[in-house]
Structure formats: C-alpha cells, structure tokens
Amino acid sequence: MSDAPVPVEPPATIVCVDCGGTCHLLSTPYEDEDGRAGFRAGDIVSYRCADCLDRWDVELDETDAPEP
Image (cartoon, rainbow, N blue to C red; front, top):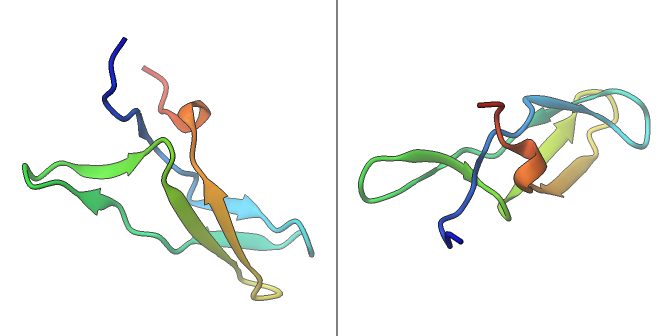
C-alpha cells in the first residue's frame, strides 16, 4: 500500500446547488519542489457560481482521478 497522494483532476465546472447555474473552478494546482503540479485527493478546491455568485468549497477524493 502506497502513502503517495492520489493525483486527481477536478472538473472545470459544477452545477450550483442553490440556483442550478454553472460554477467555475477558482483554485490553482499545487506545485512541488520537483516541478510536478496538479491536485491530490484530500485537496479542497473552490468554485464560484456565475449566476448567483455563491462560492462552493469541495474536497477532492479518489473518484476524481482521471481514467487510466
């Protein structure tokens, strides 16, 4: 079993729970000392709704990992 964080790819947009509008990703990926960049399972990413301006913070998990 590896303790390495699972790389994940958050969706660029999600549906707003309040109004049904489109929420766009605000968060930028981390960058390690070795130059690797991306998101990991457990990271919190933020979205902003284009319609009602609500902000949503979402925790990424392994289900957000890209298909191999």
